[in-house]
Every structure is written in structure tokens, then in C-alpha cells.
Length: 519
Ligand code: AHR
Figure 1 (cartoon, protein in one colour):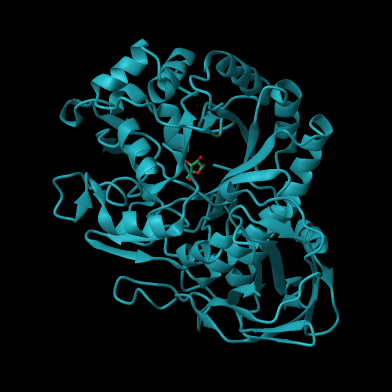
Figure 2 (cartoon, rainbow, N blue to C red):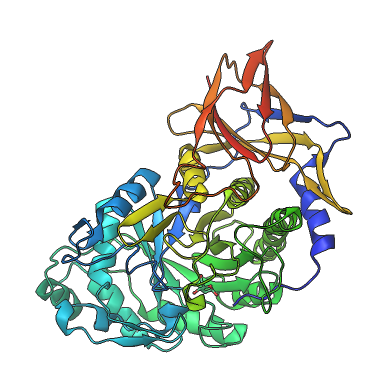
């Protein structure tokens, strides 16, 4: 598990400073410069993560073809439809910590004959391997998702990894490709992304960075490209503020890798050993601390990227934030090893703040994976037997779909503070981009729990006449969707914007996320 040193107060002040300029007035001012486009926001920033953990895969995605829950070839229909609508660009699997104890050959062939294994990391349950390589890659293919497969470096072998990649991607008349054919799949799948191990500094093998970097070079040598699609190889990256890890990985293996990972989880309390904080029923102290802590992503990225720039000034190596999101205490009454937590408007706001940070680093951060897709940590979807609900985080991902592949537009923001006790963070956050449909999108967040924020925007280089869009907001800081009331927090048409004399004025209700289309 990632650990985070306790320098937060100072760090957040710095993060806030680099995020925006502080204003004295209670209103925010924004300047958007449409004539000076920035880098493209890679669609893969909106990636997801599905691990063999709790009910993410089993019950969340996969119920098996014989289930009474309506399914298509074993995948539950309601979840398939929700994911299709979300436009998931890429999906990381099978872990997480699970990846470094996963042996892919146990998950192919006749399901009834697949051996079981003990899932030692997550809840101590028996994994029946019914969801394996074919089930994962077929899911991706059905939904138009690019697979991001994490190799087993911790307890696996180089041979096992190279054979897996041959199995998945080789079009040749070769042993592993023929085994795939014998298991019913003729054509190779496209697998554009490979992670070489997960958290090798911890659950992935407790390695030192030097050893991990050398291991990366070794795996990279033997894991081949079997088709003309060159597989992007992503090295295991640091936890949170472990800058030394990034330095060593870049120094030793920077020339060989296509991407370097970073894991940073937001904990309301920053306490990994005690209570991490609650998912619902929190007071303003945890609302504030959660958003303060998540803004640390900005500071962490600046520091890690500065190290990467030293070794790779041309920015050839991507920063891949392949685990992020809020991690709270598990829901009372659930298996604590299943990491099942509720998800509120606070968490949707947290997600939007992170999107804005990723957009601001689009020239280096080209992939990210929120943890996790269904029923685990900051999930998009929660299920309970045949029931399913979409979380506020699902809705915010859906609202930001136009930012996938959009060209960023620089914004300058002067924002009031959100002050709580003796600390403060910016009250408003903004990001803008020209989407692939050529329309400009502006996203705004007001983190203030009880106050409206008004944003006045100068639209340089843009002759917009109208601003239309949607808002996600709620009455309470912990408003969330339940199986009994699944539509408590859902996007609504937004009517709080007006353009007059070339200026856009937006009135943001308390704790809201707004995405506008400017035309
Ligand atoms: O996402 C849950 C776990 O968090 C992952 O398995 C691991 O990589 C991280 O510690």
C-alpha cells in the first residue's frame, strides 16, 4: 500500500499556488485563450482499473453465462450498457497486487477445468479463474476499450510473461498463438499497453528501485512485439512522494520504457494504519481534508515530472497515473479485504479536480486509471445481486467525455479561497479544451460546501454566443446514490450561465461540477 509522508499542509499551500492565483474578491475571474491551443489531452487519461478484488470482476462485471442475472456470454448486461455509455478508453487488468500472483495459464481453456487459486491479497477468497485472458480481452473488444495488461513480475517468470504476450497478440503459426486458436480465438487481440509489474516496491515483490529497473530491462528484452502495433511498456512507478524511486527508474531504465507509473490515493485522514476516513456521514473537516489532500496530486506530478524531464527532456516517456482516487474505510458490514465503499458528490468533485490537474500536465501525463471500475474503492458502478447503480463519479466521468482527445486551451484563473479552520484551498477550478467535434468545452468546479461562486470569463479568441451544459451537484456534502434512491446525484441541465458583451458569467452552486459547451 502506498505510504504518504506527512508534509501535507506545506505541500498543499504550494500545490494551491501552482494551481491558480489567489484573488481577494469573493468572485472568480477566468481568462480562456482559445487562440493559443496547448497539448492534446490524451483520451487514456480517462482510463479505468479492474482487479480481481472483492466484487469488481465477479458479480460486478462477470456473473457467468448460467446466471439468472441478465447477461451476454457471462457479462452482466446492465454493467455492459453503463460502461459502453461511459466511453472507457483503456482498462488495466488483472491488478494491482493481484497481478503479481496471477498465472495466466490458469485462466484459459474450459472454465470447468481451470484450477483455482487463493487470492492472498484481497479477502482471502478462492479465485476460480473463470474470468481470464479471453474474458478480459473479449470484454474490451465488445466495448471498444484498449487493454492495459499488467504482467506478473513478482511471482512469475520472464518466460511466462513473454508467452502471455505471444498468446494474446501473435498472428503467427507459433505455439502460443496456436494454443489461443485451440481455445477458440483465431485472430490475435490488440494489446497496446503492458505494465511490467505492479507496486514492485511493496506487494509486487518488495524490490529496491535498482532491482526493479534492471528487471524492467530484462522483461523488456524478452517480451516481444508480435504485430505491427508496438506494445507500450510501462514500468512500475513510485508511490506518492517517493521521488528517489522515479529518479532511479529513469536513470537505469528510462531509455527502455514508454511510460512510468505513479500511484497516489487520496485518504480523507492521510492515515493508512488507522481510520482512512468515511465514505459518507462525514462532517466538513473530512470534506475539506479530502479535497485538500487530493490537490496534492498537482504537487506530486510537478516533482516527479521535473525528475523525468532531467532524463527525458523530449517527454518521450509518459507519466502514467495508473492508480488514483479516494480510499476510505470499507462500508461497515462488508469484507474489509473487498474495499467496498460508497461514493458521494465529494468524490465526484475530487475526480473533476484530478482531471483538471491531468489536463494541465497533458504533455507528460497521457494515461491514468482510477481505482476501480466496479464495487471497489472509487467505483463508477455499484452492484448488489441483480441491482446496479451509477455513482456520482460515474456521472462526472461521463460529463467529461468530450475532453477525451481534445486540444487543451490555456486558462488563467483568479479564485477565492475555500478556508476551513486555519487552512485554505482554491474554491474554484477550471479547465478548457477544443473537443474533437471542434466545439470548445469549459469545465468548472466550485468546491465550497455552502456558497455559490460566480465566475466571470474573458473568452479570448472565441466568438461564443451561447453556453449550454450540465451540472452535477447535491444538497449534502455526502449526497450519494443508493439502490433505493439511485438518482439522488445525477447530472442536470445547467441554466446558470450567460454570455453578454463577449463575457461569460457562470453562477456555480455550492459543491458543483459544470461542463459547458461554448458556441
Ligand atoms: O487498488 C487497490 C490496490 O491498491 C492495488 O491492488 C494495489 O496496487 C494498491 O496498493
